[in-house]
Image 1 (spheres, rainbow, N blue to C red):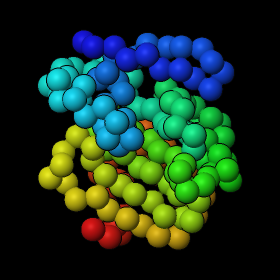
Image 2: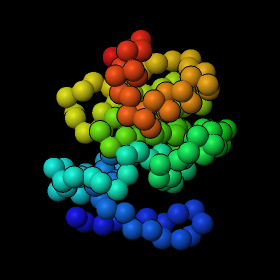
Image 3: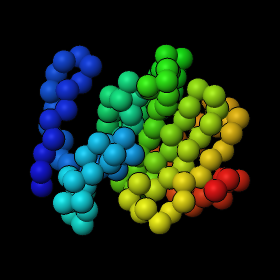
Length: 146
C-alpha cells in the first residue's frame, strides 16, 4: 500500500498508509489519485481520525482530545473554517464555528452531503462520539437537510 509522509505541527514526521488518510474530505480533494489507487484495499490501521482546525491529523482521539480539537474552532478563519472526524466507513462529520455541521460519505460520491445548522457544542461532541463508535445509523436518523 502506498505511504504518505505527514508532518505534524511539532515538526515530527510520520508515515501513514494512503488508505488510512483517504477517508477525510480534505485529503481526498488533495490526493485524489492516491485514493483511486487504493480504493479497494483493506484499511486496518485505525477506525477513525480527526482533522484539527489547521488540518493536522489526530488518530483515534479520546474524548478529552476531541473536546480540545473542537475548542480549536475559536481560531477558525476563512482558510481553516472547520474541524472534522472521519470514520473508516467513509463517513465524515465536519463542524464549523457557526454551529453548522456537514455530514458526508467521502467514499461514495452518490451520497448527497447533508447539513444541520445551529448545533450546540455538546451535541457536536455527542455526534463525534457516535461516529467514533461507528454508529452511523444513529447519526442518519437526525433531521439532516439534503
